[in-house]
Image (cartoon, rainbow, N blue to C red):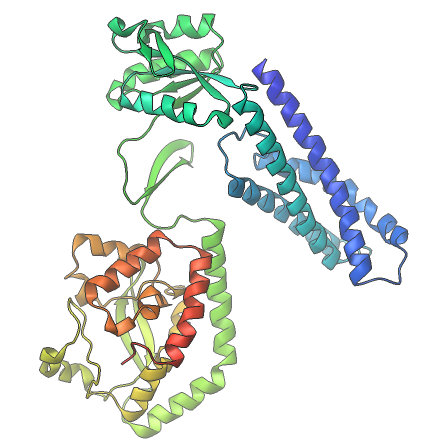
Length: 472
């Protein structure tokens, strides 16, 4: 019965997606007609673009199916559903543009294809949200539910039962528990009863309407868990095993396929999502564009440095980047040629705590160097580091190798993300902050990272640089 319902829902989703895709094409023609081709009759434009559906409909169905849009997604969030739809349609649009380019199909405008893609994503996501909310309401009223057998009666097992009971919209009802202790059989636990012991699994799932089995046993019972998985697999029953080895305070946990071997992965830094890929793309494209755009300024500043003081134009220094990889950072030279030799005599004037050396009015700075530091123009050559992939526009500041040897264990986690030209430290006071506050801001950035946060930091960096706030 459950499989029949799942098949019906899957078919309904397929039909709705096909209808929505056809409507998206009509809507795209309307928009294109109104904005770019008002002189052309609407029906003529529609007839010219309708043949595209012969390609779009089967390809969209295949892509949606490959990306799992027709699988049961009771626990998926709206953002997850939206991302899957965007990814699937994006793949299809890319294929459509490439095919029209190589086959020289001029009847279909690439701008029209973009309109179609955007409208299609919006409509597909809206339909999915409406369906999801409708099904949630039905499940909350007791319809379309799955019966769950929980193996175990400990705290972990009971926490699963409480979670399922609290989220009735998931459509999962606890049918009963299996206990490691035969004496518990018949006992009432929360919303369900202990209906058997571990040895009764085969009989319980054979004689009762069980849709899923959730195993919540200590992983020390690995042989027992393996045997239960074999029994459930033999009867075609979906089985879930609780893998909460420990409760991480920082790391995100996800399961990944390691070439056929399932791995439980704990990540204490942002995962490789589409946002992270987009961040890398923005870094490379943006740095290359800015180097070209600012090349005259590079030449002017280089000339000023060379004319006003002896020494090289660039200051090159070894720094520590992502996962302790070392690289050479580039800056415009702001100090006298023998600045490093003079540092030892100035150690007592260091104004920052921890393993960082900073002096507000550093006597080693040249006149041009002070201006460069005040406006942060000395940082411009780091665009080369961004282009090389060693740094990002936004991220923790890259430390010196000598600094990280003095880190406390918790401070090393700031090296789990690519260093940046700017970051929370810069827009929150920069050199006015003490070392520990600086480290905590870097970790706060890592734990809350998003493209939106990067964008906010970049917007806040501009006034911080222009006003010279915290610079020295």
